[in-house]
Amino acid sequence: MSWNRKHLLDIESLTAEEITTVLDTAKAFKAVGERAIKKVPALRGKTVVNLFIEPSTRTRISFELCEQRLSADIINFTAEASSLKKGETLKDTAKNLEALNADFIVIRHSAAGAPQFLSRVLNAHVINAGDGAHEHPTQALLDAFTIRERKGRIKGLNVTILGDILFSRVARSDVWALTKLGANVTLCGPATLVPRTFEAMGCKVTHNVDEALAEADIINLLRIQHERQRKAMFPSINEYTQLYGLNQARLAKTKPDALIMHPGPINRGVEIDSDIADCGRSLILEQVTNGIAVRMAALFLVNGGKGPQEIGVG
Amino acid sequence: MASSPAGDSSNLKRFAPLIRSGEIGKVAYENLFATSKPAPGGPVGWFFLWPASHSLSMPEHALILNALGIQRALTRIAHEIAERNETCADVVLVGIQRGGVPLAERLAKSLAAIVGLPIPAGCLDVGMHRDDLDQRAAPKIHPTQIPFDVTGKTVVLVDDVLFSGRTVRSAMDALNDFGRPKRIQLAVLVDRGHRELPIKADFVGKNQPTSPQEKVHVRIGEPGQEDEVVLERP
Image (cartoon, rainbow over all chains, first blue to last red):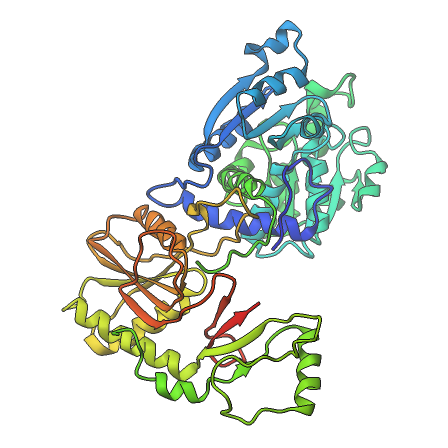
C-alpha cells in the first residue's frame, strides 16, 4: 500500500504498487456503489471543477457521479460555454477557477500535457481525464480493475489491444498500466495506426489480426479516432472492418474464455459486430460501472496529505 | 471497577518487559541480555533497557494483557453484553476494521454460547468517514461486510483500542448508511483514555492509563504469534 501523490496525471510515472493501491481502494468503493445509500462523506466540503475542454459524455458523467457519491460540490465546465471561446488562456481559466477555491480540477483537454501544465501552476489537485493522444489514466485503471476482477489476476495474461493505437490515449495508458502489472500486451491494427515504435513501451506489435487474437485472454477494442486523424490512415472504413473488425468468425478462433473490452463509445459494425458487443463475453458495461469505483478511489487517494498510509488506533 | 478483569492478578506475574522492534532492537536485545538477563517473572513495572548515558533512545515495550488475559476479558464482556441486553435476540456485533474484527468474531462465539442463539457478526471500515482525510495519506480501505439488516437491532460496535473516540464517531456515521439501529453500544478491549469526543465505552476489557505519546499494540490471531496487548513507550 502506498500513495503519496497530490495529482493523478499519467500512468507512466506510477509504480506497480501505486496502481495496485488504486485498484484495491476501488474495490472498497465498488461495494459502496452496491449499497442502498451509495454516498460517503469522504470529500464533504470539497469543490471539484470538471474542466472538460474536449467533448466527453461517459467520462464526464462518470466523474460527476463519483464526485457526488464522495459528497463533493461540483462545477461543470465545458469549452462551448466558457470564456475560452472569448480568447482566455487555459492558465487564466484555471487560475480563475482556483480563485473560487476549487480543491480539485478534473481536466479533459485535446492538448497532450495540459494536466501536467495545470499541476505546475495551480495548488489544486489535478486529475487527468484524458489529454490529447497522451494518456487517459482513469480509463487504464478501470480496465486493469475490470480485468483483475474477472480474471483474478493481471500478471501473465495476454492482452491484445486492437484498433487505432496511434491516436489513442487509452492504448498508451493501458500499455503502461498492464505491462507494469505483468501482463503481455500485444498491439494490433493497420500499420499506419500501429507503428513499430510502440515496441519501446514494452509491448509486442503485430499487424496480423489472427496472430494477435489467437492467444489473447483479453481483447480490448479501440474506436477509430477520426477527429484526431488529419489525413486518411487507411483506404476505407469498410476495409478496416473487413481486415480488423471483431466478427463472429474471428471470435470463434479465440480462446473460449477470452473477454472483450471497449472503452466506448463503440461503433457497432465497424470495430465490433453488434451482437458481439452484447454477448456474455463482453465487459463493456462492467467497465462503465467499474469506472465510477476507480475514479472515486483516485479522488479519495489524491485527497490524502502526506504521512503514513495506515491510520493508528483511535 | 466493573472493567477490571478477573485475570488481572495472574497477568501481573507475567508483566515482564518485552522488546519487539526491528533488526537494531534484536541485536541490542541479545547484547544486553547476554550480560544481564532478568529473571523470569522479575520486576513489575517499568524496566529501563538502556543505560542513561546511551545516546540512542529506543522504544520500550511492556505486556499489558497476555493471551489468557485477553480471553478472560472477552468472556467477561460477552457476559456483560448478555446481562445488559436480556434476550440478545436482536443483538448483532460489528467489528471496526482492522483491530475490532477478530475481537467481534470471538465475542460473537462467546455470546452465542452464553445465550444459546446465533449472534451475527460483521465488519465495518470507517476510512471514508474519517474527519482527517485531507490531513494525512489516504487510509487503506478494508472490506465492509454487514450481512444483516441493522435497522431495529442493538448493534455492539467492537474495537481493540479506544483512544480519541474519533474512530467510533466515524463508525457510528458509517453504520447509519446501513440502516437505523435501535441502539448502538460500544465494546473495546483496551480503553487508554485521552478522549477528544464525548464517547464512552459500554464494555471495557482493560482500562489502561497511558500518555498520549505511547502506543498500544493489540495482536490478535496473528499467525505464529501469541495474542497479546503491548504498551510501547517511545
